[in-house]
Length: 334
Image (cartoon, rainbow, N blue to C red; front, side, top):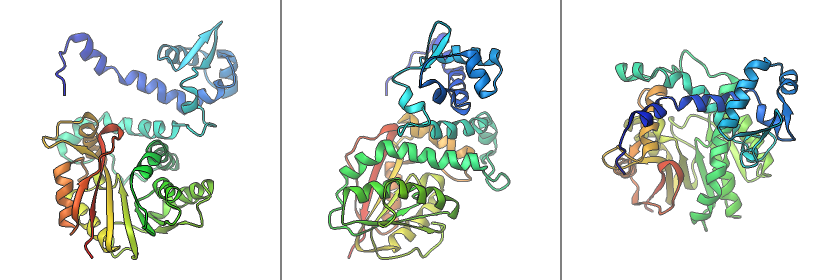
């Protein structure tokens, strides 16, 4: 990791970088981009259509032009060609759900000092039940991210000869779907909370996978899980828990595997000294803000968790993934 030579201008740029973030969030939340993909519009026209104040809207539109998300000509605005596929709600490549999930996290991040002082989350999941909008943003945001990565992952992992896959904490089932698309002999079960089921069923229907992938409502902390699987997949599940709960979760997953089965985990993985890569280090703080014991784990810590679960022939797959993510696996002996 290269050393940064800090100067006042760069330090202040980092300090105020959230201004641009909040402008993007506001544009997505107000659905401005979807209304601007069909052609240039004037401020007054957009303001009337969306019920917005023209003065405030013109300031936001100009800021989005400065961020190169919009372009402006003759006092009319349009989405830039490169941004349009990801910010148009009608586009299959739309990333607005994960952007809105990030928006819902901003308030908690503004209280990071409190979480560091207390060592406890400031996003209290017990007293604050997520709203429908927050739940939808999270689940469909995870779908947004998985759609960028799952095709590459499914093509890289060899599941030939495997028949039944358990997608533990699989949310809308993006990975289960892509594994089944890649392996015609494979069927899958998504196990997640009941509140996730409508999103999963809609996604399965969209990909015509309802006959090969089913959904079981349950809590993956509890055991025993349904059995008879020869593959278990846990994508970004462990970071929400402390080491003890991770061990219990992995033990339950191994219990669901037949002898000879294989378990895969995908996580944001820290180096041994825990100071890099950058994203997993920052993501650990996100877990501090929102969970009692969650954190990013190092590769050595994850290997130890797999070993404690009774898995052998553990390895980290050689696949390049964004944001410091990695995939590790272990085998259940016959």
